[in-house]
Amino acid sequence: MSLLFFYMNNYSLQNISEKVLGKKRITVEEGLWLYDNLDIASLGKLAHSVNMGINGAKVYFNRNIHIEPTNICVNHCLFCSYRRRKGAEGSWEYSIDEMLAMAQNAIEQEPGLTEFHIVGGVHPDRGLEFYIDLISALHKAHPKIHIKAFTAEEIVQMYKLDAVPLEKGIKALRNAGLMSMPGGGAEIFDPGIRRKICPDKISADEWLNVHETAHKLGIPTNATMLYGHYDTMKHRLAHLERLRELQDRTGMFNAFIPLKFKAANNKMSHLGEVSIIEDLKTFMLTRIFLDNIPHLKAYWPMLGIDQTLLLLHFGVDDIDGTIADTTKIYSMAGGKKQPAMSSHELINFIKQNQRTPVERDSIYNTVKIYS
Ligand code: V47
Image: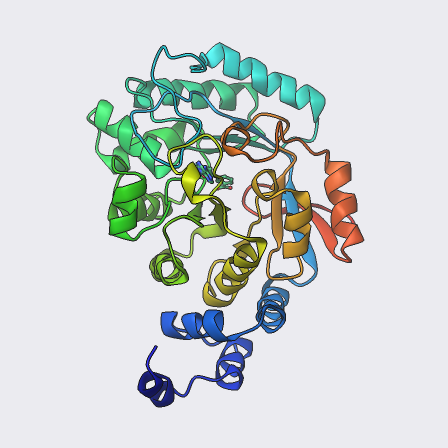
């Protein structure tokens, strides 16, 4: 940034802090200034106060299971450690009966389970019909459990395979029992980096359009960002700006989840992983910049529980759920092996950090406060 630019805009910690603490929106340039000039402690203090203003001492978690219907995928994302070709060793494609059995098993292990989180590969020939049958079967067997399912990428594949218009496709899933959507597939919106790391994926505009369409149909969603590869803070803030702009129009994003690039067993392994300092700064700036999405989630199976708890002091208010040991997306990329945490453990961890554990449902209604 040139000195003249700096002078003209009169950036200073005092000016920007006053804006943030006065609940005024900051620009991408101001976010970058904070990133370049502010020490971790001051940035953390700002992010913490923003979170306290939105969520107070509450830290949210839920009881969920991840169901990953398949890892067979038509896309060739370079960061993915999980994708396999159809028929290749290590590939899976569960039948609806197998997934019903997984759900049943999870409920027996965790009777208070409230969510099925369903995300998988973009299968070459499983279209809308298959997934409507899956959702209907799960919903019929467990009507009280919230079904949060499918990334925008999976939805686009479904409606294309069955030649159904997007809105009609989402409506059909909603009528079958889909209640909300997770935030995956957003990766990074910058077109150059997006082409480089996930050349077959839908564009940022298409991703945003699927979420906007879901919002219009009354389906709340989450949003993610894959960071820590070729991206810089400028790309991250530009990504957040597009989400902030859509949220101004719909107000239907519940949570934002920064996903740290994990480098094991994929075609971007040579990049390695960014430091914990970069993680902290990314989460802090996200909380400061993204003033209209209420919840900032640190996904513990990816970051590890220690780093997740540290982030509670720097803007994070949600640590996702108990998960059972059902997600492989991160364990295959070098995240925690077989992630599972009992609700008792999550509650104790939150309390040890002088915060109030709040068990939530998928759309942030309170199930129980553990004061
Ligand atoms: O979009 C894949 C990411 C996402 C890697 O909405 C990787 O509550 C890091 O969307 N390193 C899918 N990340 C997971 C997802 C998600 C997870 C948790 C909570 C929610 C929610 C959504 O996983 C993909 C991609 O960005 N991913 N490979 C990797 N090597």
